[in-house]
Image (cartoon, rainbow, N blue to C red; front, side, top):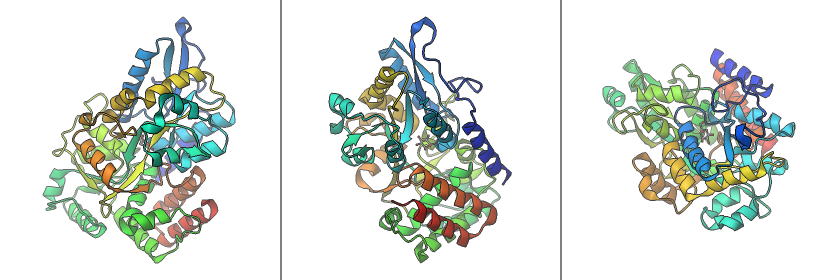
Length: 431
Ligand code: GAL
C-alpha cells in the first residue's frame, strides 16, 4: 500500500515541476534551452522512455535523426515512469503554461483526441501529403489520430497489451505443462505456483493493475463485449462485468509485492522468482535486448509468452505516436524528427529494440523475429480491441477515474465498490 501512495506523491511532484531527464538524470530544467553549443538548435523530444528496454528504441531512432540532421541536437526530455504515469502530468502543465516541448509522445485513440480537441496540436496533413504517409499506415490507425479529416500525429509502432509472460522453469516446477488458455486455468495455475513457494504473479506500480484489469475484462467478456464498454450508455454494472471483476479479484490475490514499475516486476519472471506477469510487449525488448539496455535473457528458456488467458485471437492494441504541438520553439526541428519517426528506416531501427511492430505496412519483416514474428502474424489476423491504460479506448479524465477506482480497490478489496467506480467513470466520461 505504501508504494502506491509513494507513486501518487511522485506524480504530484512531477506536476509541481520535477525536472525532465534530459538524457542524463534529474536536476535539469524542464525548459530546454533553445540552442546548444556551436549554435545548433535543439529539438526537445518528450517521452517516457527512460528505462531499461524502452530507451534502447528511442536511442536507435535518435541516432538516425542526428546523422540526417547535423544542424540540430536532440534534447531527450524523457520523464521516467512506465505508461507515462508521471510524464503525462508534467506534459499537461507544460501545455497549460504554453511551454510545450517541440514534439511529444501520445497514444493514438482517445488520448490523442483529447489533445486535438484541446487545440494543443498542429494539423500534420501537409506532412502526410508530402511523404505520402496515408499509403503506408493502416487506415484504421489514421482514423484514430484524425479529426474532421485532419491528421495530428505520426504513429511509430503497434504494441500489444494482452501478453502473458512466463518463466518456463517455474511453470515446470509447479507441474504446469502449457500456458493457461482460460481465466479458470490461469487461476488454477496461480494456485499451483503458490503451493511451490514462488511468486505466482508479479505486479508493478499502480497503473500495472489497470493494465492487468484490461486483459481480464477482455479475457472474460470477449472482444465484442469488451469493445462495447466504451460506447455511450454501455452497461458497466452488468453481471458479465461483475464476473470479470471477481476474476480480477481472484487473480490479484496471487500478486506479489508491488514493484516500483513494470521493469522490476517483469524481471521477477525473467529471474525465476515469479511465474507470470501480464504486461505489454515492451517487456520483450527489456528481456531480450543485450545488457546495458535490456536483460540479455534467452527467449523460450528464461521467458516465454502467450496471449493473456481467454484472449487468444484478439490483439489488445495501442500505438505510440509523435506530435507537433502548437507553439513549438523549434518547429522545423520537430518536423525533422517526425520525418525520421515516419520513415521505414526510423521504424525499422526503433521497433525491434522497443519490442513493438512497426506502424508502417511496408517495413522489413525479416527484422521481426522470435516474439515479434508472432506479433506481426497476430496483428494481421486477429480481432482488435483498444487498450484502456494506454490511451486507445478512454480519454485521460476517464482513465484517471478508472485508475482511482482500481487504486481504491487495492486498499479496500471491495469488488462492488470497484464496479460502481468503473460505472461512474463511464457515465461521467463516455462521449
Ligand atoms: C506505454 C507505451 C509503451 C511503453 C509502456 C511502458 O504506455 O505506449 O511504449 O513505454 O507504456 O512504459
